[in-house]
Amino acid sequence: EAGVTQFPSHSVIEKGQTVTLRCDPISGHDNLYWYRRVMGKEIKFLLHFVKESKQDESGMPNNRFLAERTGGTYSTLKVQPAELEDSGVYFCASSYRGSLYEQYFGPGTRLTVT
Amino acid sequence: QKEVEQNSGPLSVPEGAIASLNCTYSDRVSQSFFWYRQYSGKSPELIMSIYSNGDKEDGRFTAQLNKASQYVSLLIRDSQPSDSATYLCAVNIARDDKIIFGKGTRLHILP
Image (cartoon, rainbow over all chains, first blue to last red; front, side, top):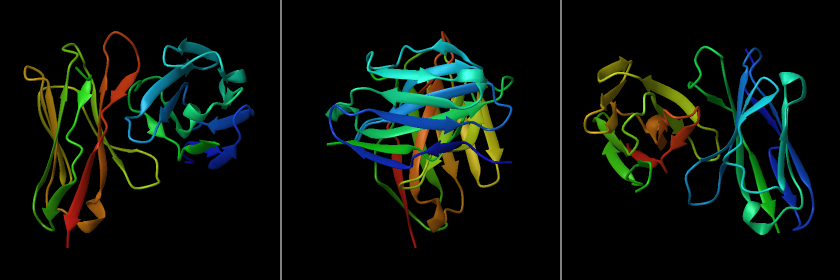
């Protein structure tokens, strides 16, 4: 069974540019989460999808961040325009409906904003 | 007070010894507790979950939960160099569906 996949693995962009991160959850997982780890800090929750619906987006930093999950399969996280403080590793995780909290993580996308 | 606290380490343990990793949490009604292992540059990997007071064993790993003390720990028996990693404690916040991570403890197994 394939795990959670993320693309790209690494992105370097300039301040003010736009970046879109993609996450493909484990097949059959209704729950999809986005997290971010800024250097030196703990992994922080950004938002949670149940199928295509946003269940909780309380962790999204501001309106420069937009997440979508059309059709309840893969998800994208767009940052527009990117700022220096957006640099970090963005992780996606997914879980079954029945084991809501056992989340399986993807390899992450390292975003560097210069 | 931070919601999930861990000693950042590094914790150095001789090969073959028991490594003990500790975590405290602030939300008294938390219900689910997880230990993730993260190798440098890799994603967190779920290694243990525990939901009720007491011990839960899986191979060389034992998770211990004490809800009264708001304390969860991970014991690694017969430590191996391959156990060297950062161990993340994660706790669900009962009022919603998300889990909160600690900063992690770096474990170094000395050959």
